[in-house]
Image 1 (tube, each protein chain N blue to C red):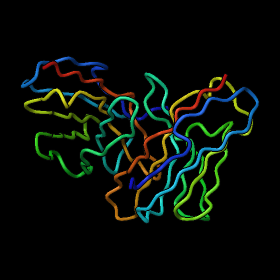
Image 2: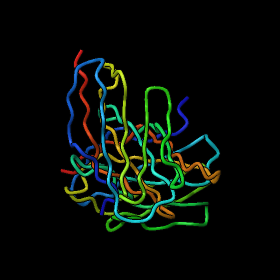
Image 3: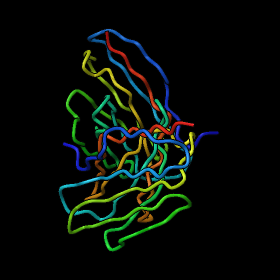
Length: 109
Length: 113
């Protein structure tokens, strides 16, 4: 079964707006990662946040982690049409990783 | 050249046929993984290997087998393909540094008729 579940399943916004995606998980984790996938291609790692961290930034990305609520959020600021992709959270609870079903983000120019 | 390569990129086969998907990496990573992706279900782990002598089943290993021929090569086999194995298959690698970032290949689109 999947560990992480993203919400919403799909998100459509205008260029320049911010996009927020959420991830909930069920068991204890060592870290949580976010990946991006352009249609039909391999996943690309965006950012990793460890269980003892609460917030992390990378360029236009901001990730938060709340281990008490077993949830994380990914914020993309000032979105661009090129940000159109599917975004997945992945949790590492030990030896393997579990991916959610993803959020499909569409950024309209 | 890509760090993680997969062959073939596309394959159409018939029910009952044996299929092998191959993955090679030039990143020098010890850990390698095979995932399948189905629409709406995200990625699910099939098998993973932490070194040449280590093979572990993932979430959905039934109907699949793997071989770690060398540090750089990890193959996935479908001994007798069935239609519900139609999916997008990804190989990934990671190192032991503790970063745990995974690097993905471009994927193999497999269709079983």
